[in-house]
Length: 373
Image (cartoon, rainbow, N blue to C red; front, side, top):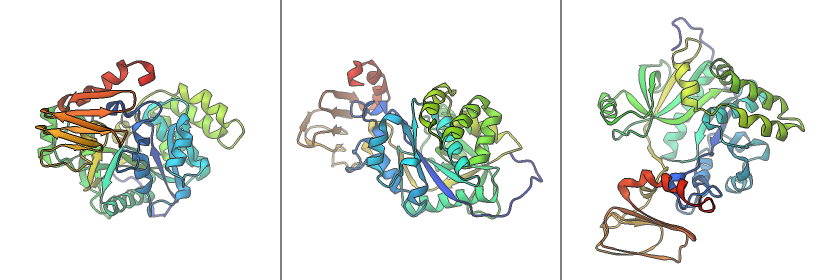
């Protein structure tokens, strides 16, 4: 945490940017989510994709010309179609996925070269967050925290509603004076067991780590240099070549060599123990869904009297708690006498799964023939 007596900075409004990370593979949403069409591009949330929703979430918060997207380079045309306001120069194409530290560092390197005072939000493409105004207000407070002190890193915490073991947690410390319900961060905990998750829920001082952040771009790069110098060196090479004819060849050569590690492990955890940086937690009291599995996708749908949900033409007989997904609106799925199962129909693959085993879908996705992955 920041040392006592650390210098304070005057509030200076800086240029605000946002980068959406859209690199997830979505294997727990197989067989609809595939390598060729991952979950963030699927139009399966009321006819819209998660990436479209993430882009719309920035309306009135960050102007279109200062929004970036980082994703696999092979998805470039589809991303530009999903977010038509995205400018080609704000596309950060990854030759291969190198986890979230390097996606964040990629954006930081490009923005710091473009604007030495850039402050940017890191957002994800697999969340549904409502209400919009509550999200926008808290994001603005996160920007203000970093604009007031560029050495401060901000993470956004979601108020837990159950003892989740699949999410990371952040513990809140003292409230930060002069800001609306913003706190120092005491520690990060990655995916605790059930007993600890229940303790964190009962304590009332823990938030789910949302995977959303705000950084001063140049200060973010500086910290990556401290904690992961091999990434920092490669990112500098990419930044130096960004506005030159060597951009594509440099990214293709350097990016696959960057160490694969998450931003939480490589940046946020060591920074939380480093007096040169302070970590702030901005709690978000919003409805937040991490649409990473079929059950969480099902929560976006209205259930019938028997708890059955789906986006397809369905016929149910003596069935309860059935979730049906289909990529063909003219296809009828009929279910008789089943409870708590998931049925997913696509043109060339069908999944039938007990709802309580939904986490194992990724194992099936990795085991099917390559042309179905």
